Image (cartoon, rainbow, N blue to C red; front, side, top):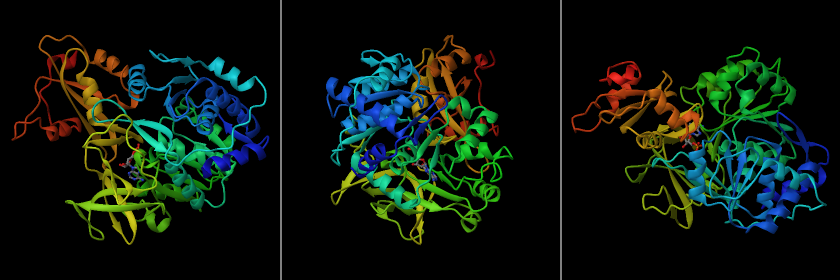
Amino acid sequence: MILLEKIWENLQEKGTAVAYSCETRQISYQELGKWSGRLCAYLKRQFTQGEPVLIYGHKQPVMAAAFLACAFGGFPYIPVDSSTPKERVQAILHSARPQVLLAAEPVQADEISIIDRKTLEQICEEGGEMPLPYPARKPDEIFYIIYTSGSTGVPKGVMVTCENLDSFTSWMMKLFPKAPSVIVNQASFSFDLSVADFWPALAWGAQEYTLCRQVQKDYPALFSRLEKSGAKMMVLTPSFASLLLADQSFCAKRFPGLDVLFFCGETLLPKTARALLDRFPGLRIINAYGPTECTVAVTAAEIGEKEASQSILPVGIANPGVEVYIENGGKLAKEGEEGEIILCGDSVAAGYIGQKSHASPFGIKNGKRYYRTGDLGWIQNGVLYCKGRLDSQVKLRGYRVELQDVEQNLSALPGVEEAVVVSCENREGQTTRLVAFVQLYEGAKPTKQQLQALLAQRLPVYMCPIIRLVKAFPLNENGKCDRKRLKEAANGRGDFEADPRDWE
Ligand code: AMP
């Protein structure tokens, strides 16, 4: 695997250069090599290669060592951020059935053997020299499994192969022939946006500089950490960039070394790109597009002054290993015609773990895997544009949420008869919040606050909506729940029949 070969060389050659940096400490390439070598040897002694391992925590250096240990040892890893509620962790365990859970933080999980942080650190730091083996992974082996929101109320585990990741990282190396020395990570390891910084950083022999969630909520701490980082490149969501831009000091004067912003995961608005170009003259802005199911990103566009003056930004040109089609009414769309974006080729993942449904968006055509994205787009002069979704998936501050996932989890709460979740958008069409309309059973007692608390035990905070209790759902002409009216009500442009308990 090209990626691991590059990293293996860097671990031998980069010595005391910093490989990974988090709030509490920095570790060098030498240390990372030692840690992951010992952990890899331990895993190989105790567990079965090819069987998944869950890695839980929040950006601790031991997580980085665990990723490398799994990658070199031949264990598909499942990264789970510690902000994930217990029931969601349990759903992931149930779906992927990992053989062990490596916990960089205390975790509540049933029916799984757990190796806690202290033990992990002991394995990493003590014991003799156990160098990482030279990588010998096969292209179709599973490299990682990342869970995303699923429309059935249960998260879906996307199985990304060694070939998939090699395709993505080789393309990244070509996009940035001059390796940046410090790459700032925003996303948690639960999201595949983090794959766009973690693996390329180590392949470049650069420093992966992580921002933990507490720092991201605290402007002075965030800006001072960013300043200290000497960041050359940041991998981030447009929502995070808007947050940074809200502070006038996010500019070239304070961050003179910042050369590249690599965006992915949601729509980048022209006004955001323009503001960034104003604040950072000469900045390279990359608008990359792709779903987790196709390994982080498959297309990318450079956004300069010319592009930023358009009403919608391009998402660009595909990784050479991937073909992009637009399909409309079962036929290939013509140049400029809108339709569903279909992706085909090396980056398309091996499917969802444990799912072989006929309705799968994955398929095989002419011996190549393809994936129906559910995104609406078009191609003009070879450049892809993405306009939005064809289904009820939304992006909220960069997080992917299936509205049905929230509905299913709300409907499973005691006292809830039915739940309908709608999204509220701003003028630019960005989702700003989720509102759930909930109908309780006659005589049911839960208050909105109790429902909120119960839901937070099942879903990550970013998926939890504002709750309104309804007496009855409005119906449309077909006698179905009128989601349009509820959406208008949620946006303050209409009313709904509130349950008197809504005011309690
Ligand atoms: P995720 O699997 O969380 O990365 O979400 C993938 C989805 O995010 C895609 O299917 C798109 O709907 C959306 N998305 C990703 N990148 C972009 C982009 N650059 N512009 C618009 N939408 C995007």
